[in-house]
Image 1: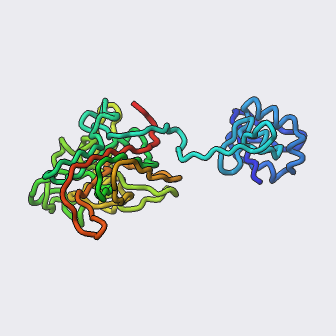
Image 2: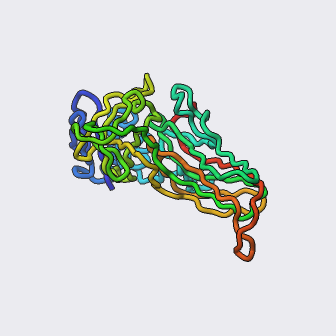
Image 3: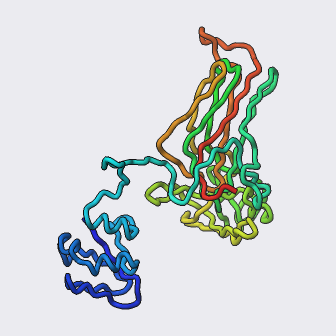
Length: 326
């Protein structure tokens, strides 16, 4: 058990009953100097906790005054029913986000008023038409966004195939010589006057201009190199100070072709109905990552032979957790 105490006042707090002095803004594990029974008997400690002069942490989370008292008294922090049984609520929702259901993306071309005004995830295939991908963008740079689950509704499908994937934005570029941008394995890296392509400085500052944020895993570790840095301006809704990072320690990349990051749904649909793709987890959508929905019309009959083209329909909704819903 850990009982980290922090004095958040500007003066030394003396817990005379247990001979402990707390210096301002210094974390001290009280169990290094007293037993749990002594802490439980120290009325001074509880007075300072309830007046929010001392903050208690369990070594991982900072506790509210009520939770801190329960923690010290070895009481369960979980809510209980009238008969004393613990009540457990499981949620995938990260702190400071709200759950929403999105059947369309954000409109990155109008970032000041973009929420839910982007491409709808609707397939209405007609005989003779080519299957085309739908790209769903979300403005996540100032609206942290997690994808949780997906739900598909469909009609008249005959083993038609659906893919949901994550791909990066693609940056527009032109050929050049002796530029500051060089193509390399799908990304554009800095070049000091020796590059082979050029980028439009007026386009790359836009939220849909091609900057793709480097992903961090759940431990806070970067999952790939980044060769550019940039500052997002929440007032202008543009990037400022795009700068090269030659050693790969940057936060962003430019991709010049569509690289597949992940495929999280591959399924065949038959008849008319709906399908929930359920999960207990979440994955964060970093800036510049797009959801690509692909379909393949004409599945297979029971003899695994191709069938004729046919009309069919499909919509997709995503369960998401976002910091803002406007």
